[in-house]
Length: 151
Image (cartoon, rainbow, N blue to C red; front, side, top):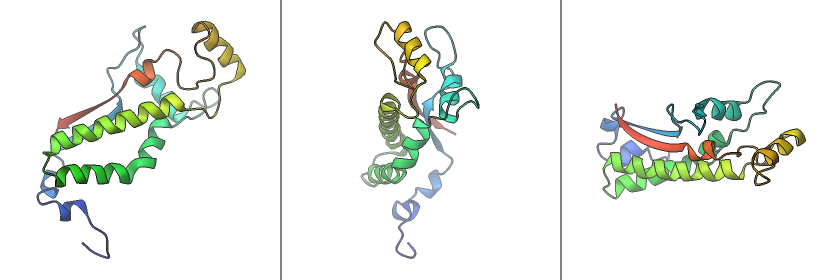
């Protein structure tokens, strides 16, 4: 501890030794495909970062992580301090981050779709989906998952 800041690896004995042992991945995994066999990660990236002149950036995943970074770190620290093993603790954290990303993607509104996109989505979905910039078929939101790997 220095300057009033508590580092997790100072507070939790043995945590520093675990660095590089496990990794947590959250988002659209490489193998995720939609009902047509298309790779979901490709259009998730296009929405997250945008495509100049075609798709505006809608960084739902990145903004979720940025907005909740300290909450995630504290939550992981709490699980580890309570004696949970690191792999299980990361698994629980992954479930929380996944749920937060799904919520963010489902509620995303800005920038809104162009009117022509709204009309096309209404036609394609039988009127169920219009101005939901990150939702049409549910493949993107349904592909958000997490995994813990030993490295």
